[in-house]
Each structure stands twice: as structure tokens, then as C-alpha cells.
Length: 346
Image (cartoon, rainbow, N blue to C red):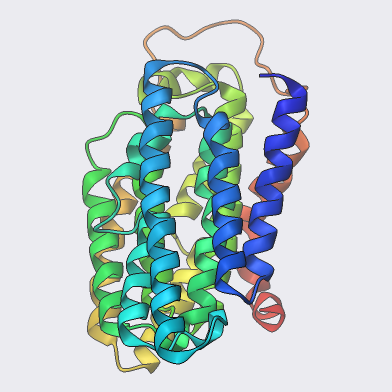
């Protein structure tokens, strides 16, 4: 792709996200979402492969439908209350339509079908954008409207997302699809706590972004797309593979790593809100996700391919993203002891 075109699309992405997260008026938020959608489409379809074109088409159709629903819910709310302010979404029907629209934007169950397909058809760098920066504007809208959303609906969608995200990722061999289902189950954790403590939703999203960015950039530098290629990747960069193992375990939410922090805080908050059954169910469902993370981790470092190579190991990769991968991986592994500091900032 032309560097100037890529620059324009990247600037548009940042602009669209900034407009949505800083707006008070529904029409401005909608405009930001539209700019975002249009900016990411060329990045999805840049390889001109039929699967990439299909992914871009699916993405465009679902996001257009979701944007139309956002506009519809805000207009219904304005019709009944006379308010265009995002925080004044008080009409119950409007809140219901908005929840559906944002769920469609994010890929929450039952509107999740497009997400694994789109991620599978995109390059790894675009997949990273779809999993992180493209989820920020819808989550911001949920954050701003959280007092008027329906807790029962959100809890149901959250538990279904955690269940389906874990269940459908079990027999996948394509790494991008596994990461898509992992994203859906993480969204379940973010949604379940949204009404009770919206700041925890944002904290969970930030830490998820951190860990996913580390995983995507590592896979991109190793040029790995399938589990079979991941099995032989350790011969090239053993140190990077060892770090990828820890980052994947952090994404799974195992205790001494960063990924345990949001899960721990969410379970604690749900228990305070007398929602111990919901906390128990979603914790048990996260074990499904743990299985496929362990499978990825096993393929990364623990399996040995039949032909061991004798060439020199590449301990230092001279790529521009190497420093970024090092920083993100370190943060993905070591932030748990800094929990009190993180909580004071959030």
C-alpha cells in the first residue's frame, strides 16, 4: 500500500476515535464511528485476497447496521426527552437499542458472528487495530451511558460471550480466530461489571489492549498465522517464544501475571454487589479460554518439531517494533504487584 495512503488512513483512525471519545452530542459520536469504519476498510482489504475482500464487506455491513442503530436510538431518545447529550440516555427503549448497536460494534454475543471471520481475513497488524483501537469508541459510549443501561441484559450477554468465546475457540487451528474468540470472552468480563463499576471496565480494556498488542506484534515479527507454524517458530527466536508463552498465560488470567488483576478486581466487585453466582459462572467459563491459551502456549515452547535445526539462534531481531514488543511484554507480565498504584490512577 502507498505510504501516503496508509498515513491518511492511520490519521483518520486516530481522528475518528478521538472525535467519538471526546464528544457530548450523539451526532458527533456517530460521525467519529463512521470515520473509523471507513478508515479501517482499506487496511482490511489491502492484500486484495478474496478472503480479505469478504472480510472488508462483512465488516462494512455489520458496522453500517450498528451505526444506523446508534443514530436511531439517539433520535428516539431525543424525541422522548429532548436531549442529544450522550450521558442523558434515559429512555428505556433507546437504551435497549443502543446496547444492541454497541454489542454489534464490539462483537458481543449474540452479534459476534462477523468478528472471527473479519479477523481471519485481515493481516495481523490490521487485526491488532480491530482488537484494540476499534473497540475503544464503543466501550467509551457504554461507559458514558452506563447508569441508564439494563443490568440484566448486560449480565446475560456477558455470560453468553464468556461461554461462546471460550467454547468456540477450543477446536480452532488458526491463531487469528483463536485471538478473536479470546477477545469475545474478554468483552464478556468487561460487560458484566459495566453497570456496577464502569472504571473497572476501562481498566480491563486497557490491560487487555496491552496484552493483545504484545501477542499480535510478537506473532507478526515471527510471521506466524497457524498453530503448525507456531510449533517450529522456536528455532528462530527462542527468547521471543519464551516471552510469548508468558504473555499468553497473562491473557488467560493466571495469578502472578498482569492478566489476573482485572479478573480479580471484577470478581471482588461482583461479590460486593451480591452477584456471587454470576461471578462463579463467569470464572468457570474462563477455564474454557484457559484451555486454548494453554494449547497455544504448549505449541509455542513445549513441543519440539521432529527435525531440530543446528543453525545459529537469532537472539536479537533488528526490527523497528522490537523495543515496543519488549516494553509491552514486560508490562503484560509484571504489572500485578503495581495494582495499588494502578487503582489510584484509575
